[in-house]
Image 1 (cartoon, rainbow, N blue to C red):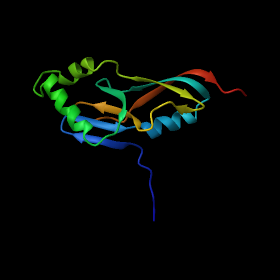
Image 2 (image 1 turned 90 degrees about the horizontal axis):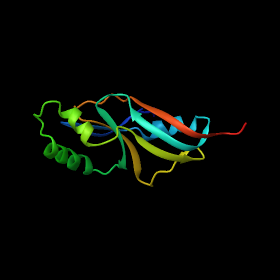
Image 3 (image 1 turned 120 degrees about the vertical axis):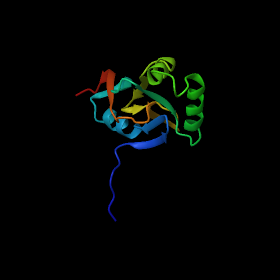
Image 4 (image 1 turned 90 degrees about the vertical axis):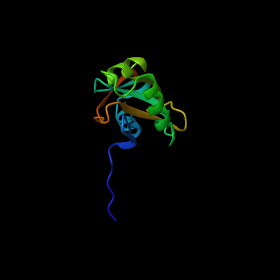
Length: 133
């Protein structure tokens, strides 16, 4: 049997909402860094995307898409830009200690896009204490 690593896990692929689970990749980046503890800022590279911390529950993405449709209808001009503004900051700040994120047991780092497609681009900025040599 041959196994391959899939770099991004698709959490949801709905008509107007794409969600990628980037938790494992971000964790690997943190583990390979020289920082031991501090705060990580995870942010999207795409202008009309955002990062959120949430549980990866089966029905939540469909409910979220329905809520977004009520807030800003599909046919609204510049819908993606309006949603991005309404949903607040584009990135998430996550504390970490001993090279590990301090997330809840079921919490995941999700990259969200509203235009039906999401580039898997994100960046990690670390602020904190470096390992002692």
